[in-house]
Image (tube, rainbow, N blue to C red; front, side, top):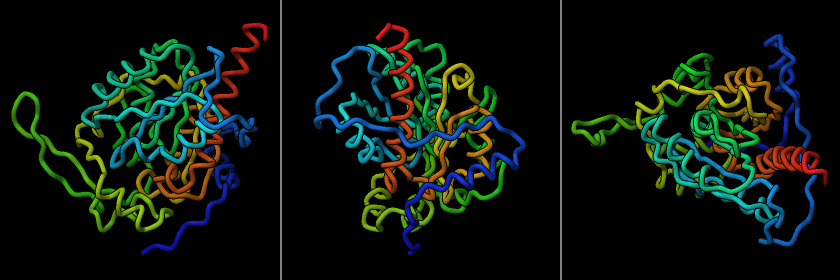
Length: 291
């Protein structure tokens, strides 16, 4: 069993990564200053953003539980829909239908493969005012999640997954991936208590191989302000790839010494980054409305 990973923000490593890239396009977000509101009491003003959280592969919406609890304690409206994990275009279309049901501005966050989904789903969505990537893919149009993973060394996901068949709607069979249960803790959630990781492994959601291979057709981060959390102990998406994607998207970024399942192991810094995006959106709307 791997020892627990210390929980501390290590922005210095991200600065070093950006320097190595020769870019100054990454801005570093300070932890959000949060107001103390009564638990469970949503903001009444219509210009307060709704936070929509999209999980990634090998997880479900419960992976956001610690973040949801913190956001709700601050009075924010939160949605965390279940992602089908069947294909990028179809997954993005489903999330777009969720976004279209929300009144008012939206801060849209995605973890892992969910980052590719939000990049496509938010394209042309007028309500989405900020994107938050949490150890996530940020593809350009034409890029797939697997391409981005292979761009830098360090991922051990391929050795930890098993393939199983699933029926296709039109007949025949496709392939979907799962992480070996005995390897799940070390591969996906090394900073999470073993008992929690075992529950996560038992309930993990498989993703189709086709979804990871499918190229993106839109890149909403080109026009929507973005934030990024780099998980420096990630064994799924190499941290170097995360830094590179954050820099390319000109995201306001922080780094946390945490595993891929950072929203489970370290929900506070994840929440703080989302709140930074929320407050930025709220401030812009307040200025525009003359408040």
